[in-house]
Image: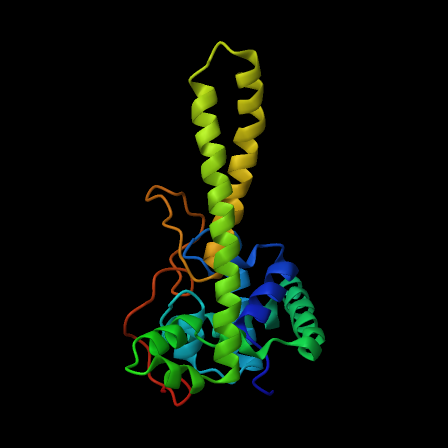
Length: 236
């Protein structure tokens, strides 16, 4: 398999196949509905990319390489024993193969690292020239995405400001009607911004008392440090 399959492609395909937003699969949430999709992502990343386990872990929320190895092994076991999982995995694989014709090969390039390398260089112009084409496109794509997030944030602040002003007039019927319109709109925009930021690699801090419905799994929590034998693939 050539290196044209990106982790973002895998996340999108698995999210569609399992009916789970890709941002939640990549997040640090530990609810039971995310366990199998994460195993699927780890397995497909192992089988369809040339990335090392540490590199896959960094692209999946900075998880440790042993967590990725464990998740891929669990995914392989589920494919052999669970027909529903196998069917969803096949659906995700077919979507990825179909997307290869228009694959964005730059998506796994580290835009932030490339930008920091340019701006931290003694000669930024020379450093910019030395960037790969994939890195240039990745930096441009991230700049556009952040511009959309900034515009959405400004709209959300305007909505929150109007909500505050309406709340100061509790006896005004028009103000109450406007609050009823603004509250769901602001909530929807807030969710969209959170998902966009997760897609850019920013992690949402979950409440400490969030209920869980699955046992602790290295694939689903914070990066597991240490443990597990090193393999030739895991070593960079």
